[in-house]
Length: 56
Ligand SMILES: [Zn+2]
Image (tube, rainbow, N blue to C red):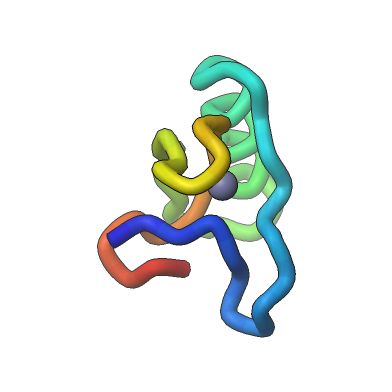
């Protein structure tokens, strides 16, 4: 289940559109090699990036 919060309990950066979230995920991939997905949040109805299936 995708999460609104990071592992330390703070709210994730919200993105208003999927395109914004995807470009942020792409940047993280480029900079850190992070494998991130963008997903629509059921809590705030904006977009976040993270490891979708690990709630991170
Ligand atoms: Zn959210």
